[in-house]
Image 1 (cartoon, rainbow, N blue to C red):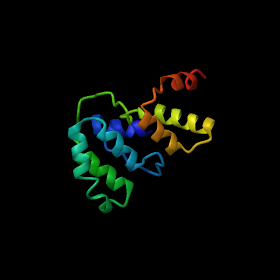
Image 2: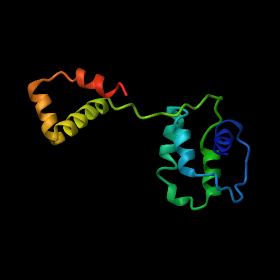
Image 3: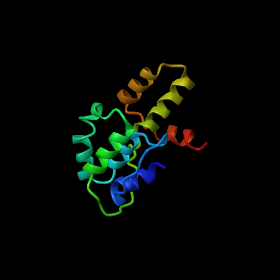
Amino acid sequence: MLFDHLKNILYQKEAETLEEDNDFVPFLIQRWLSMHSPEVAYIVNETTNRYWMAYAEKQDWYNMMMAQIPKVRFRKLNYIKKPKDENGKEDDIVNRIADNMEMSRREVALYLEKEKVDKKPFAVDIYKK
């Protein structure tokens, strides 16, 4: 249902009544609208994020979005993911060494940093599983 609302706001522009529609969540609609293009994200930020208190009812919010967002060409919306944390592997290595040596993680991290220890042998052992 979420994507039907998005399709209606972005591409079709057909007025719709939201009678007891529990699938319509303004936050999620805003999030997906902002992933369409920078122009749509700007409109969302300048309207709904500033004046969200003026729209107490979902229907009012929906009607405002229908009026504010221009009809655009169809484009697949790709979900924008947070980039993977590269420090995650190093944290796993530090945690594994700290557990094996019964030391604090801070001590292990300081030692590895100070002594310039190569972490690759430890990484091979951890990620074989």
